[in-house]
Length: 307
Image (tube, rainbow, N blue to C red):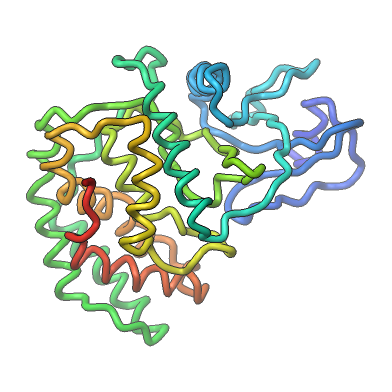
């Protein structure tokens, strides 16, 4: 289907093919009579997600929800689901302390509002089946990419650390960590500051161990963000983020005692895949620097605590 037909299905007239503003999936900025909108491809569980994010919005969280249109929104077009959101005008994250603490505060508000049970029937996190062969294959790819761009990464130590994470999966799976409903893609490139942070991409909402979501923010908050530092948070920045987060959330003893294992598991799940499977990222100097920073971090992350 022509991409302009997608816009037509939502009631927006155009004679030209729209150009995506995001390189990895279709995301179109569309001008309306009085406001601008974003039309994007999203997950097929969108109905469940929309019920959840509407709850967040109704409780005061700055998050986009589908705009009322004459056309159905979201809607299935072909085999894909598309949604129209309002375009949020503001500024991008640049790594200022105030931006960091407000981002932490917003994530804390989101986690605080989670129901105790998965009442929105969101997809449940259940990725505890990594094996040593997968690690070996991924590490070999990372080694090849790093060598190709003359990037220094301690491959042997990285592989050893990831093998340790494979061995702790079952413990994490069975230690009854608190679960939350969360957008689960909480990164700087999904926030617009107005000046308070506004979440513009809640589409990956899921039912997830709370500290896994927090660990993902620690690891990849600066991922694929041109205006962000090309590294993980410093320890000071992490404490700044955390200080905003804990205004609304009390971290439990099981979370405190399993934090380091959780960080390593999320690295295994999210960062190993990113470094091994998204080859084009290695061509981007900022992403390469982030990968080096992530590798250095995971080999010595003990100073990034939850207390």
